Image (cartoon, rainbow, N blue to C red):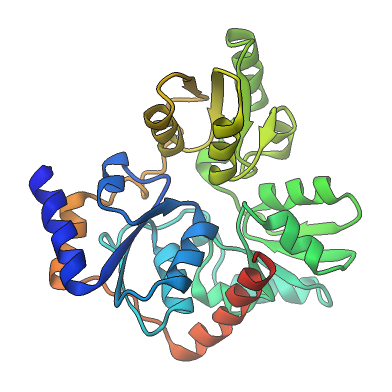
Length: 302
């Protein structure tokens, strides 16, 4: 592994490349990544970088997003099979029909979606800024897709905005049930329960804190508590255990695993960077239209 890491780092320098890694990735990917974080943070870094090549250790929609906002860069996805089940739940035609059935309302698109879907939306959001984005529209009604759980969580928090949601979800987070939280409360009475808003609303309401992956990590950093139940993908728990060895972390369920996120390996990162393969390409018309959606989000999130 040491040889792989050294070779990747050397190639990055030679090719003026950076590696962006999502917090759900295998933890060894951090050893070569320039930036590790959630979707909003990585989008901002993709926008800001002066690198010629962006290697995205994540899933397809994330690499697409980097290409949308940095079209002059070469964006590589080490494993093209790394998709997103939530993003696959809505395509362009389903998006158009969703809008037709609910006219005269702005459309908020979760970043977990394809460029073709983003092109039909008014503004993008991530779990880090969903509340801020919906509030910024200053409207009594919005359409929200594809994650119904995140949309309904936003609606509950804002209270005065009707959020009409598309029926999509993240299977990993959607699989957490009320009984899982209740069991954790009994088993770990001194632990704070930290929940991602992609979970069902009836689950999220039971948490001590609800927030994005970066929000959960920041909560732990600031907290004086010593024990935490983590209700999101295993990669977050892995990084918290590494960064805070004096604290105890319990993953809510053993199956909190995004298989697509775990596909990327150091070998694949090296191969894609060395040979500059698996490049993300987009139709320019789609790219421009989807860029409007993302750029508007980034402007609101400054």
